[in-house]
Image 1 (tube, rainbow, N blue to C red):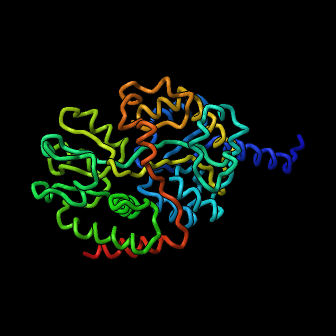
Image 2: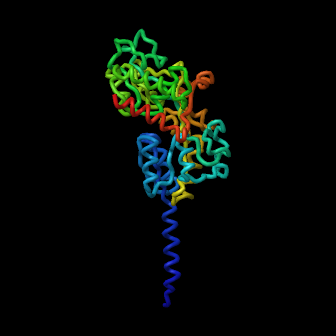
Image 3: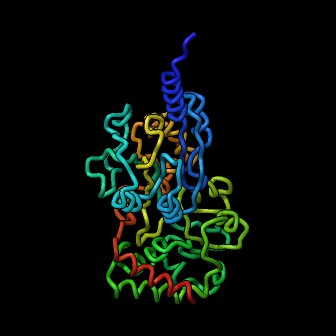
Length: 344
């Protein structure tokens, strides 16, 4: 029997490409997607799905820029989406061509680099406020940044803030009545001095393990993200609370984006469609204790979550929320402030 070796090689190549298309590699924040959502997608589609984690936007960007291969989907904050678009690291997911696009609230397309609302999918939103130990803070106003930047003497050594340049400087700016994204050198100097005066009275600047330390009393008050804080509050509602500072706070949002280097675009687009389903979006938001941009999913959000004003704040409160924005070259002003703060 005559064997056409060229034809066999071609068939093997096609088979190899088909196998490759049935893989998907997610690169997401630590503990930022329901594992059951990922496994259910894998079972339903047969697409082998892997998940790696990063701790912050900058870590993710550095790894991608360094040439990390194999990732298909990342979950940057809005400002990082804008940066990655400028750097040519993302491609359009062509959201408008996907089933379920109409389930997304158009008000959540916040990236300046996505005016047509089709590149990245709004994934999760929340706030950065204050988680507090109710017993230790009894008698003190916990819904103000004052308790962090001008703490009462009784709470010295019991305050924690995020080890995050934009979050902590932004909070100090807002506390002083300035814009969260200010690039005014005088305003940034005021924020720097505010942090430096308060820092000796803080217990720590960190991003992990905050909830347990508030529960056990190591921290009386800590700056933290609403989803993580809500999970802690749910575990100990009599002992712990969460508040959005009255002066204003960061209203963060992460989006789901397709990398320009993705080798599994078809599988990635299937995952976008999957995540647009109301029941999937609700399941993920309920697990995250997060805010879903999928308006069709809202009826399926757990009442304890959806009816909690600290997690789904009123329109009046949302007016006091700020979004971290890409500052371009002026980010160096923040880096200078942060270097000075960390040096003390």
